[in-house]
Amino acid sequence: MEEKKQVTSLDAEALSLRPMNLWQLAWRRLFRRRSALAGLAILGVLVFIAMTADWLAPYDPNLSMLDVENYPHEYAKRRVPPCIHLFGCPREQPQHLAGLDGNIRDEFSRLLFGARLSLIIGFSTVTFAIVIGTILGAVSGYFGGWIDNIIMRIMDVLLSFPSLLLAIAIVTVLGPGLINALLAIGIVSIPAYARVMRASVLSVREMDFITATRAIGGSDALILFSRILPNAFTPLIVQGTLGIASAILDAAALSFLGLGAQPPTPEWGSMLGAERNQVFTAPHLVFLPGLAIMLTVLSFNLLGDGLRDALDPRLAHEH
Image (cartoon, rainbow, N blue to C red):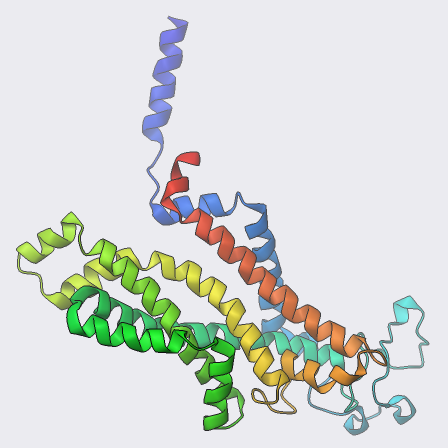
């Protein structure tokens, strides 16, 4: 009797469990991966810094200390090392957590505002590339034939060039500047998303529910945008998360070369490029922007790897 009651209680508990959809299962598996949680934590800190930079930054990131009211000008010198009162820096000296740069601006304030700009760069370029790539890949995979050949051959031509070199060529033609750099990075990222979407569409369009929708007279637009795309979009989420890291790196590289964000915009790549010759005399001005870029890229890579594992249907049986 006791065994029967135990089995009955287990059956009742199993019946009471509500089935979870794909996204609920994905989130559940994601939060079981420590690497993904570490990436999510770093990204959360970066987003918080980007949103509160106006309040966290002690100085205007573009303002020289010579132009700050009531600032003791005897301490306004180029490339002053970090001064932290808690670690023994004289109280009469103004506190600068990351020192001053070559233009006598507060490096810590510029690092904080750089987080905002880097996240904007990453999300905006990837959003642009995903929208264009999704449309091209979906049309190519669904209709096939000569449309598929034309679109994919153009994508192959773009993929035949190293992405950074192609971005440099585009910015050189358009002219240096942050907007042109974003456009160039977005253009060179389109082929990757177009190919991923095409592969997903090719696998989804042969499923039974697509055949049924077509049999009852569903139009191509209805089938493509209401049936196929929602079921083919999952791989793009992983690709987009990893693509944000690449976009931030490419933007930093363009700014380092003087083709991206222009002075005095606080961008990590341009900050690193401006002080690259001071690696031995003022290493903090090179190390800190480089560390910020590394942590940002690492957070998106860890999160992207976690999402890839969480959204993989082959892992569903493990949890």
